[in-house]
Length: 150
Image (cartoon, rainbow, N blue to C red; front, top):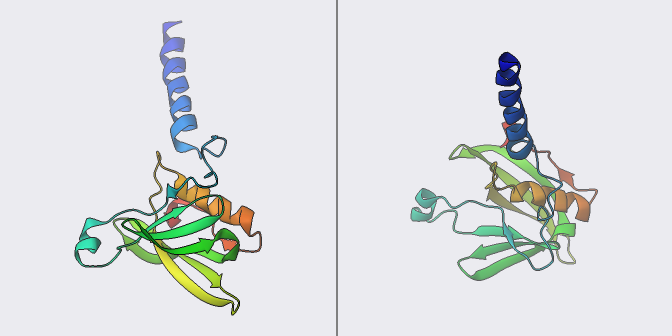
């Protein structure tokens, strides 16, 4: 009986840890941003900010992607206008830079923004952003998140 318990209890603990910390939490109620609730999907890098790069932060809600610098909103992109979200080969602080391509205005010109994601075990807002883009524009090319693309 002692051998059985010494095996079962640690196994149950490991299963619970995997279930709650390492599997995607798509069933959480707060996974998707509500209308007007901004969720940050980019990370601050102090070194790049000192060099004058990576000055913008990116947020999203149920309808838009926002590009902000300090408190000012520089750009508002409708999630339905996004045509591609993909990871690039560039890595900063062991994180891949993701590129978001979108169409603007009546002329339908393509523009691109680059985002250094903030995805972690405890902050999965970037995965929520990818799901929100897929829901808003089913024709958009949205790469799936894998360990190699983080």
